Image 1 (cartoon, rainbow, N blue to C red):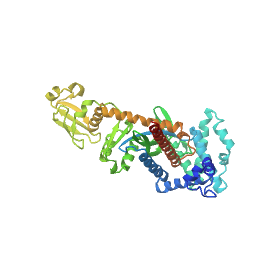
Image 2 (tube, helix red, strand yellow):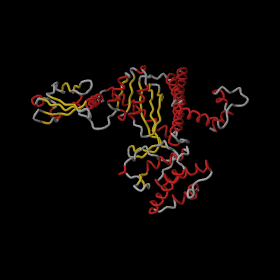
Image 3 (cartoon, helix red, strand yellow):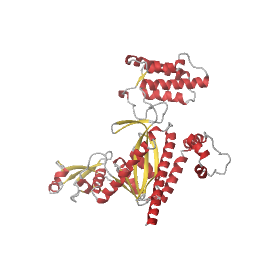
Length: 451
């Protein structure tokens, strides 16, 4: 912010951009930008409308038009983003949360229950957390839990966020014994999940393990318009990191209007699924997944013919109708029985592996399995290979955002604040790509003149 404010005072380009070049005194201070961001955050918190995001998306659409990008081809990907917070043990998490609550009550009321004042002392924190032996940890945790219970009983209704965070961490991290005392929760008690409070300084951050690496923070999803002249990130979303890729896709498809008819959306296997395919088909969007998650299906399953609702198998790959069948509404699978003579004469008999019973040969299939097999068959086509090469280009965005725009070191905490800064970084990345595009046009012009 200080750099922008200094540039506004001494750099004419900033004054031209903001239409303030004729002002004797600039209508801006070193706090203007921070107050502006805070007003935008509170507005989104109250109304759910992301003003910064809407502005970035509008600029992205205009940038795509200037670069003559074809809006019919898009690619999607996600990335994990670390919150700017330190790792904490359960002892430190409980102590810091209780200490914050004590400090907040002291600031509001001016006094607190005897025996809790030590939690407002910075020196006491070092003694409890860092000057610690492993055999003392259990005793210290028991003492913290007891003091936390005393605090909540004495101050049940304070309206302070720090006290509510203490109440939350006790609910998530502890279990109550028969005598009313609290103890640390274990896996056997249940309730241990990724949405638990990770750090009291960033209560929105969640925990997720991906590819063997543990992430504390958020995840971001971006939709990129692709063309021969370059690419532009035209839309993005920012959520806790336990938000799945499939949910990101459903959210995006749900927001798309009818003008997206004929659009091809290329994504990896994390965005696959029959529900996503159906929703994309309703929007007249072709969803292409470059790989599939889970077990690889047998290709011949694509030739099973199902009814529209998937509850009835009409014919097998050899064109024979089932002798009898049953549909399981919970699993979506159909168990079919075929004539023994039909199965033995079928060219797919060795791959199908049907089970011989009294009624005939039995086989269990599903509409989802048939669709997965059909998608696998499409992957062998030339057009699919070309789209796979196009999707690979989106992998450069997470690397670029980490190295150049430092998304893992954002100077704020909280999902809405981090989301706002992420939007600024997306806008900067798109503007940089526009500059590269304009420079390439100038080079082409100069080259044509010299010839």
